[in-house]
Every structure is written in structure tokens, then in C-alpha cells.
Length: 70
Image (cartoon, rainbow, N blue to C red; front, top):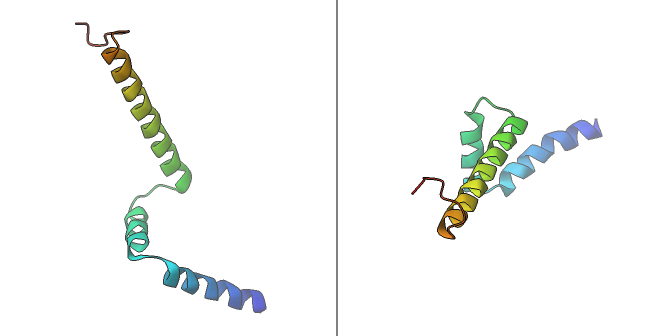
């Protein structure tokens, strides 16, 4: 019974410690029908694409490659 009481108290303590911004973000994420692993995968793919974009921009500015053919 002690474990059950600790488990019920933990979420209440977390709610008190969370900021309004954290609560708002969690409410947004609850509306997305994806699990955490899928969201992490999407974020990683976006970060990789962003890094590739900056790499291509740098190579284009340094006249190493011309991706747009000019």
C-alpha cells in the first residue's frame, strides 16, 4: 500500500513543479497521435535536413559546388 500512495503523490508533485509553458506544450503533444519514438525520429530527420541545408549553403557560398547550376 505504501507504493500505491507514493505513485499517486508523484504526479501531483510533478504538476506543481511544472511551469505553465511545460503544461501548454504537453497539451499540444497530447493532440498529436504519435508516440515519443516517432516524434524523436521526426525531430532527428528535421535536424539532419537542416544541417544538410546549411552545408549546401556553405558549399555554394564558397563556390565549391553550385547546386542550382549557375
